[in-house]
Length: 222
Image (cartoon, rainbow, N blue to C red):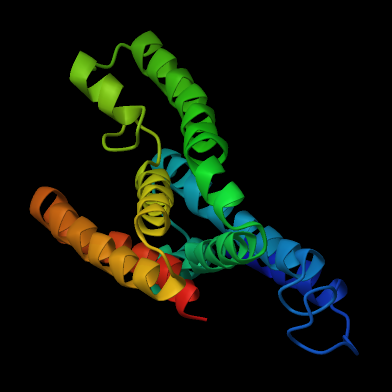
């Protein structure tokens, strides 16, 4: 699997170019769509490797040296591989609110929360069908809660649940506040509340939820 990382780095170096534009120019800088898409593409490949490795390891009797190297790197990266997705998403939401104002805020429930939830639910239904076909025992409660990302039926769920909460918190904060400073304060309070709830119900995995909310909220301070 370490060869997969090597291939990714070769692609990165092969497509690397020097930019003559200002770093934070909205059109051609480091936060432009072209630049961010390139970075997201890199991390999508890393996420892909993360998700397929358990299946590969499950069918191998013994991990070789190269696979062990991959495991060592993966242990260092952990859930940090999604930081840029949260950062870019938070930046995009911030810019949209700044340029479109209430029009964008009012559209969050439908265009952000509902769209994300529906796309995720379709994927979850596939996992439910597969689990049923394989004879796995799933409760009705588990299936229903898995549709919002609180439970899992074999799929990765925590990231989507975090995204949904972030969108919802953003909507509530900006709808309830008359200015950006007030919205940021309320958003921070909602985030802290979210962390306490996750700590109570999920305990040891607080870390992976904590950095997601932090990255998402921190961008509003820019």
